[in-house]
Amino acid sequence: MKYTNSAKQILELVGGEQNVQSVTHCMTRLRFVLRNESIVEDTLIKEVPGVMGVMRKGGQYQIIMGNDVASYYKELVKLGHFNNQTPTEGTGEKKNVFEAFVDVISGCMSPLIPAMLGGGMIKVLLILLPLMGILDDSSQTFAILSFFGDAPFYFMPIMLAFTAAQKFNVTPMLAVTVGGIMLHPNFVEMVNAGNPIHFLGLPVTLASYGSSVIPILIMVWLMKYIESFFEKIIPNVIKSFTKPLLILLISGLLALIVVGPLGTFAGQLLSSAIIWIQGKAGWLALGLMAAFMPLIVMTGMHWAFAPIFLIASPATPDILILPAMLAANLAQGAAALAVSAKTKDKNLKQVAAASGISALLAGVTEPALYGVTLKYKRPLYAAMISGAICGVYMGITGLESYAFAVPSLVALPQFIGGQGNGNIINAIIVATISIVLTFILTWIFGIDEVEKKDTAQTVDISEAVETGSNDPKKIYAPMRGQIISLEQVNDSAFSSKMMGEGVAIIPQENTITAPFNGEVTALFPTKHAIGLTSDNGIEVLIHVGIDTVELEGQYFTAYVETGDKVKKGQKLLEVDFAKVKEAGYDTTTPIVVTNTDSFIDVVAKEITETQNQDTILYVV
Image (cartoon, rainbow, N blue to C red; front, side):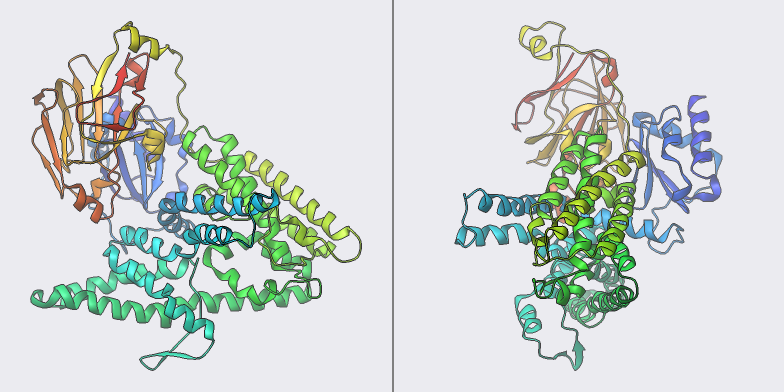
């Protein structure tokens, strides 16, 4: 009865049968594709008995139910007539255009966050070390560190090509090659020379695509249809070499002639509109610019204003783009820090804190924008509101920038100049308002995240393990590989530990073995996840890779079935991890004790590498 009641509540809360385009389930989650996802209230879904958490990911509304997901799914399908095939592009899913746009960008950008954080923090060091007298900003070391910091941002189109290829089901290396075409040094040199360029007689727009986002995303989306078209019409006997040849020729041509220039033209149009508004009402232009700067940066259109801000000097101060970026950059940093302070997710707390520091000190906002504010939306709205208010103030007071530098707290001296100290005082006021107001608004608006349950019982596990008291039970590694914490797993259902405590292994072999003596209690048809129960009652989920359910069993071989008794070290699965990686999937494998609440504590052994059948977890 509990499954039936919960299924009824879930169906009602997701908008009823008429709002469900399809629903499937994996090892732990109900996966809905909804016609209108915006009407669903996450907080109400989380209150349904049996629901452990929710995720909005990859166009799906995922409800985490745990090991009993199949029982909930069985009751759910009795209540409605659902098309349970995996939906494809163009199936008629209706959702807010902005939300769909954000979902695509955040989904593709998320894997890039570590690289952007690393680059952003290097840029922070490049500001601080010269100020501390540790590094000469004219040295070769400084120059080399500069391109260390710039690399993740400049080559963003190439990295995005790979992640977008996974999302749009395009051959990854062909997409990456198109990104390389747009950033090729010879093309960049031709653009910098400024002479007209033609390709097959067609004019090529003189545009730089370094650090851009939208052009490559549009291009990879188009490649999905280009690749599908040639797949159908090219005879198999010549497909191996003609298909990639034609895809690269057509895609490269479209990238340089049609898709790439769209951002440039849009930027020029935006630049003209803002400058026109500035001439009529400067305060309004700055308010709009500061508010929408995150979206402008996201599209790469801020470079359309380069003629304005690159020549900033005491003789020709910039009264538009750099002042707007001051308010917007600091707002992004403050929003990220507010999220770090408010969230209970340890992984998000760390990412948001580092992103906030990068934005505040170096003006590098991409980690905060793509990793935090855009992803959770409400912090982005807070930053945009704060930016607009600061922009109006700057427009009224006439704030000017007298030098080109990416605005940040460290770069505030760029606003020193003019008559007296009024300009720098206004800059400090703007910085203060932007940080304080954004932090407060973000705190009030909040963020959508899965609440983690507090555990009332604790025990000194190290003493229990060393002395043998409390009878700690052991879980052994099902494979050889590198051990990482669950917080580092790129899936919040595992990283937030809503499924239970455990560890994850980055595998270095293809064989997965039983971590103890027990029984196979669940084996999903796609073989990407297996549930086991030990003879002493420990329930463990081994989830092979992230989102590998989408492979539908390809590259997976099972050697056991549900109900089989297994011995410690017995082969359970064989996985071709090289093929899984080649298909673009993360092979990180969480090993989770799903009935953690039945025990006093579950503690990981402090190791970074494991051999097959080494101890990895203690259960007390």
